[in-house]
Length: 221
Length: 216
Figure (tube, rainbow over the protein chains, first blue to last red):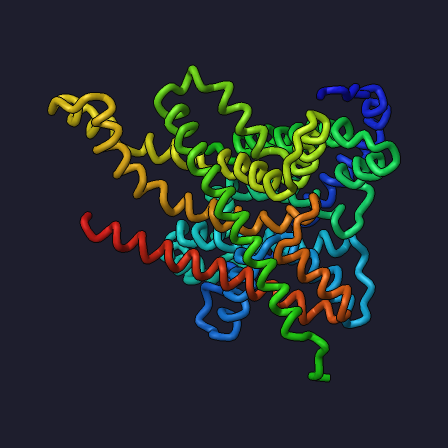
C-alpha cells in the first residue's frame, strides 16, 4: 500500500530557486498592498461623501471585490481585459487582481477606522485653516492607521497567500510557480509543495512578527 | 456587436457548475462547522491542553489553500486511497474552514461572561447543563456573523478546486470561454452567479440574525 519513497534531497536542491520565488511572492504581495491601501483610502473617503456617483462607484467596487472569488477577479484581468486587445501579462493580472481585492476588503476596514476619528476633530482642523486634503493627511489618516493597523497586517498575510493563485494564470516565478515548474519536470509533487507550504508559513509568520514589532515601535505614546 | 454565440446549453452548463460549487460549499461547511465547534470548545475550555491543536490550525490558516489542495491530493495518491477529486476538495475545504470556525467558536464561547456561567453553576446546573443551556445559546448568537463570513469565504474558495480537476462554476466558465471565445461576457455571467449566491446567503443570514435579536 505505502510504497513511495520521499526524495527530500531533490526538493532541498530546489530550495535556492524557491527562496527566489519567495522574494517574488513577497514583492508581489507588498506591491498589491501598496496599491490596495491607497485605493482603499480613496474608496473609504468616497463612501463618506454625499456625491451619489462617487458613492455608487465605491460601493460597487467594494461589493464586487468582497462577493466574488479572488481567482475570478484575476481571471477577469487576465482573460477579460485581453478581450479588448490589451495583452496583460500573468504577473500584471495577478497584481491588479489582488490589488482590486485588497482595496475592497480594506475599504470596509477603513470605514470603521474613519468612524473612530471623531468628526469634531475634522471641524477643528478645518476651522484652524487646514484644507480638506490637509485635514485628512495630517489629522484623520494618522489616527485611523492606528485603528486599522491590525487589519492591514492581516490583509498583507492574505495577499501573500493569494499570490499563489498566480500559477493558475501561468505565473512561473513565485513560490507556487517555481514549485509547479519543478513538479512538472520531476513529478515529486508532495516534496516540492510541502517545501513551498513551509516557505509560505515562514513568510506569513515573519510578516506577523515584523508587524508586531512595528506596531510596538510606531504606536507608543 | 450584441450578437453572441452563447447558447442555452452553455448557460445550463454554467448553472450546473454553480450547483457543484454549492454542493462543495455545503459539505465543506458541514465538516468545517462540526470540527470547528469541537475544536473551538476544546480551545476555549482547555486552552493549555489544546495549544498544539491551535498551532496546527494556525498552520492551515497560514498556507495557501491551493498548496493544501495539491499536497492533500498527492498525499492521497501516495497513501493509495482511491477517493474522488470531489471528496478531496470537500475534505481540504472542510479542514480549512474548520481552522477558521475554531477561532470563531472559541471567541464566541469566551465572550460569554464568566459571571453568567458562575451564576448558572450556583443555581445548581451541572457543567454540561451550563454548556448546553447557557453557553451554547449565547455563544451561537455572538459567533453567527463570523460563521456566516466563513460560509461566504468558503463559497468563494471553492473556485480553487479547479486545480485538482473538479468542474465547478469558474472552471465551467473557462470551458465555455474556450469554446465560444467571448471571455468578458462569460466571466461576467459567472461573476454575477457568484455575486447572487453571496447576496442571497448574506441576506438570509442577516434576516436570521435580526430574528434572533428580537428576544434581547
